[in-house]
Amino acid sequence: MKSEHEHYGPYMYLEVMTWPEAGLDEHSIHGPLDSLERLAGLVDLKVASLKPGETVRLRDEFAPRTAYTLVLQLQADGFDPASADAGLHEGAGEQGA
Image 1: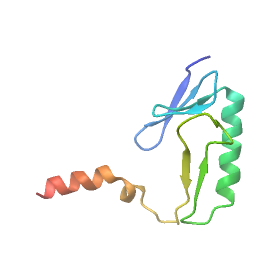
Image 2: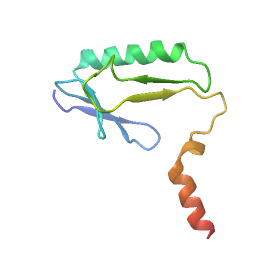
Image 3: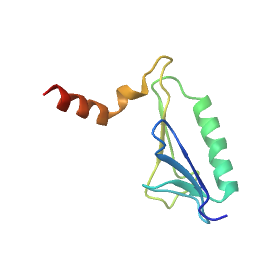
Image 4: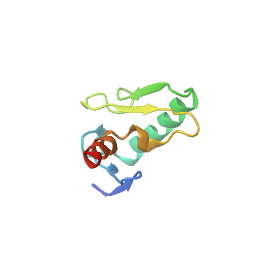
């Protein structure tokens, strides 16, 4: 069904949604199920070839007319995702003031 969705991630901000056309925007990663499955395969393929610290961008292979790009960066084991969250660092500075 159009607009069926699931939220993912530690803050549940990432939304993957069914939609007639494949795309990426400020709201979601969306598309018909076959396009979303194709994207999942692309992610698997690209991540398998990455080394820690490397980045890959997916747009043209999934939704070439979209203004947004999916950026994947592989981190080394032991990486703390919170260390990359600028919002946490800003809040820490305000509390310490």
